[in-house]
Image 1 (cartoon, rainbow, N blue to C red):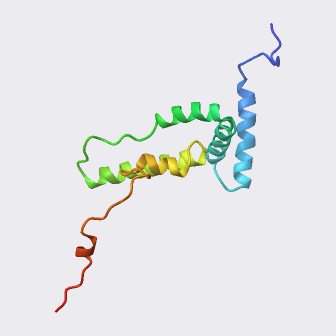
Image 2: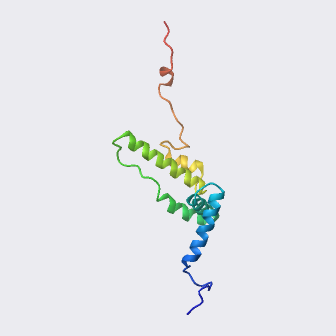
Image 3: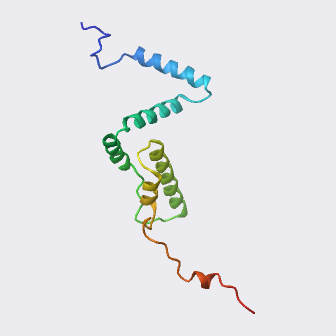
Length: 133
């Protein structure tokens, strides 16, 4: 029988997982948070570390952007619009947290008008003119 503690062994025992989760539960209790919040924090930190080089960041970014919320062809209710906008804001925040995109890149993606294109207001003076009596 092979050595159960061998470094080459890929499968960990249930006891090992249980010990790590017990330690996480104690840390969560002391910090007045949840184990899931600690796991999310650790996972995001791992993605930030792995995406430190431009090549890795590009590969991770491509995978993450595939999970972006997709706008439906048409919205039937205002609630559907609100849900989509909330999902898009949450996704944008995660991408920023993971440092996989800059705020300018997200703005460019979400904007109807390109940032290099000048915004023109038509009939602005007429809409804000005061009526002389």
